[in-house]
Length: 270
Ligand code: ADP
Image (cartoon, rainbow, N blue to C red; front, side, top):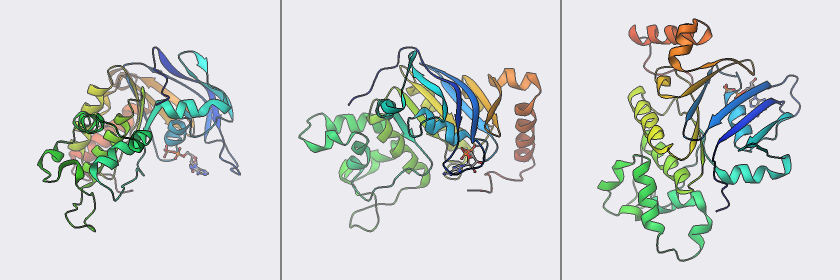
């Protein structure tokens, strides 16, 4: 409940952010435009500010300076709860509850778990389907399955399956903005491609901000922002950025060469 629909866009203007006690800004003068119906991707090396920016957009951090606006209306620091209520956030450190599959999804909107809700199971199933969690069809206990081997009849999920449950939890809230910090360690490139394609499907009527740690699937994003040391250094579509021959194109080619040489199917850092 409490989500504000998104008609036009979420806009970040001149945002800087400094962590308490830090000597330097983690973000400096960042502009970001996330239109309804589009996927915007953030890419850049570790420590360039992608996650920090995603947390500012989600209302988890208040910018040190600059603004975040929702359909043109600036969200004041005191109103960040509105941003949080309207944003479904899936960060890499998403929570794996030792609860039933139903609860793991419905906790995305905990108020609905409180009272009797005849539509709960249908909505949970819809969210799981939308998140591409096809593995749930084969569970003997269905939504009552406990997602932990520590319980009798419970099961363990793979990293990729947990990612789908976390996505379903976010979708259950029907939030107009989905912020996804890509789980680079948990998914192989093919699973990541499928996840990206699913986000593409569900972004109709919503917007998505995708924090990416790899370059291989970014052609699926509408706009890519390349970050370096807390600043946006390039923006454009995959084709535009390749043609520009800048930071994005050299990093993309480096990573493509690494894949081709079979050096790594996955980044080595977790
Ligand atoms: P990315 O997501 O691109 O890897 P981050 O947004 O996590 O980058 O980090 C941006 C900068 O902010 C880095 O210099 C990082 O060390 C710093 N930073 C991140 N989290 C914290 C924190 N909780 N406290 C202090 N500094 C942080």
